[in-house]
Length: 157
Image 1 (cartoon, one colour):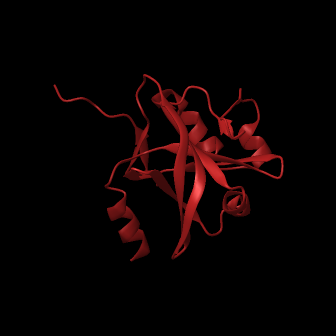
Image 2 (cartoon, helix red, strand yellow):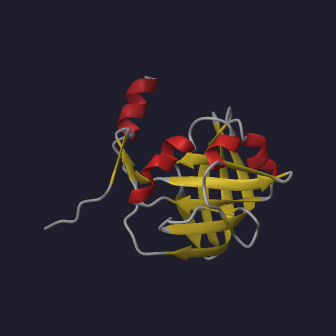
């Protein structure tokens, strides 16, 4: 059932983000397609962190995270932040910092710097709800993930 369920869930297109944090003077980041809005007032967002993620402790104990919503031009960052060590993920990148000190990836279509508001244990993941403390958005087309494929939205004629 697990593969069939995953295939069915994959029919729902999502955006793609890299979530970053800073813990014990080290940057951590990972690719994410589970980012979503919770509330506008107060401004709350969420994403799901797999229980076996190598950066789990950093995300749970850092006090917050930054969501970097990837642009269509940032497709190579998807695999870069899904594999390798934390040091390899940040290597060769020009990094900017959010007001919190967490990494902002230049070229993203949007970013949200969040303090950790609530953690909800949910099966093989933790749902991390963050309070948006700062954000911005820029022109460009966002990257989409659907049916295990990356792409961009086509506008209707």
